[in-house]
Image (cartoon, rainbow over all chains, first blue to last red):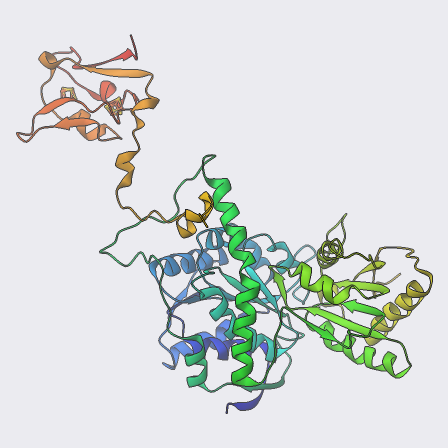
Length: 392
Length: 98
Ligand code: SF4
Ligand code: SF4
């Protein structure tokens, strides 16, 4: 079943989109997502798939065209990064508020200024409250698998929300890794036929999209939008279980690594989790009970489930590859939200790392674990928020 | 279990009933009211053309009738555009409720 290939994260996502063959794709190039859409556009030009490829003049237009195509009743995908996502900002809210299941790989990249093309999570974190489902991937395999699962989650008749599949710019998007591709027929079968809900092109049943809704009902629409998000984890787990049956690869709302009997743990998303796991192994060999929790689903955020997985710890470090200037890192804020529902409140620290693609090195993970060991012993936190690997 | 009000709203605020803006009677906004003076009317249909709310009624013979006050919001465009007969306007605006 399937085949094993050596591909980049971008290539793997483009392959997933090719296997799914969406009805419409509107996109605008931006580093490091350019190469993903370029490959996909190549599949269209070569006649391998029959997606209507719309080449537009900006990301704002790309998302606008995706919204139009999705409202018309099509299965729609695009991809972007960084400033491109920022330019889509107002349209992101419209896609979610209108409940259009658009799928978008987001190749995470830093935001200007200063101008930087490399990987961090500033773009995705900025879109946290847009109403999109956000799934973060550690490597090319996860980016591929998450892209395929995202269609099932987003298009589920109880959900109908857009979804971003995040992968780290360059670190994952441009590095060649071993990836297991699923057979075309199995992907098609897994994703299934697209079911349009209230399509504009159903001319026998005319309807209007995008009405003005003021003080009398806007509040209720937003309440309903939150409610549908709360249904996403259940559906995502159902989809993951089916996916595991097909591929043997297991997905949850988050991944834990040597966490069950751990005393200290690092919480970190995406590619940095890989490096961290190696260092955890080294510390385990030295007898330090260290573990890891890697959130996969950031929106909706599984507060209670994560609290349950972290509640036995003596100290926790949350590593953020994005910053909130004047605030704690965005992931740290979510984990403090999780801690709210615990009886025990383990001491926590927040490390900002890897901004603008700065390498996350093994010695940074070691530095964090050493600090956690001390905190676990003394129960004392000196500084809550600090920067890792910053020149001093 | 009965559904909460917000659970009954159409998904994504899509309006599923085409043409339901007819139910939205904008006439209640009016503070000024157009008055049609039939003897000055030359049936030029400028008012019909300019009215943004289709509030100038026209009968089967193509003749102008009185306004549809369910929708006329009293903007006064028709009165401004009306040429009337020999300088005498066929539409004048009056204060509503007078
Ligand atoms: S006042 Fe305005 S809305 Fe009323 S009939 Fe004249 S043009 Fe139409
Ligand atoms: S614009 Fe004046 S003259 Fe012309 S049809 Fe209307 S009311 Fe009559």
